[in-house]
Image (cartoon, rainbow, N blue to C red; front, side, top):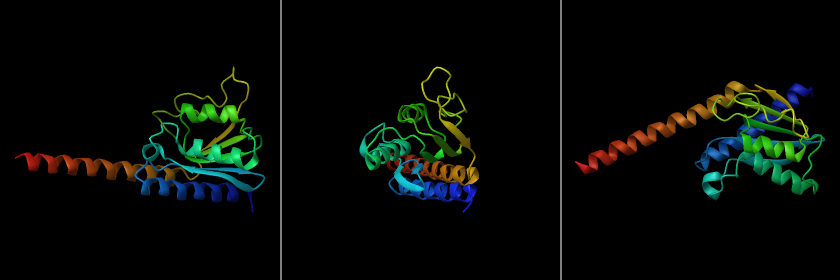
Length: 167
């Protein structure tokens, strides 16, 4: 299997995990940590259900990976995530010393891997994380856009129902 095929396989798994998040009413983001050809961590957004602002997909996957290898340092591991990491997650990646991050869709509002800032290769930090963007980007973006479109329609319908009740 070529590296490109393997990368796509892991990103497709991240997309499946993002669908789990969506089923739980969370923003559909999924993440997979791979080390030595083995998946050692998986996660999906769980902030709403766990009442935890740090329960992003990447954080969940990093936590699980650290437990699996019994070390918070994830040197030479790769993290695949459907959406560009936010500053919190990018910071955790730097602290975990992860080797590489591969993400699908860019995040033009909070992206910290190049869109609004780049914490992964910030000059003054002690570890720089290799980064690749755009893997299965259209699929990742479409998943997020469909979620937010549906959520906006639901909120609009709820508002309309409340207005009808009050009349």
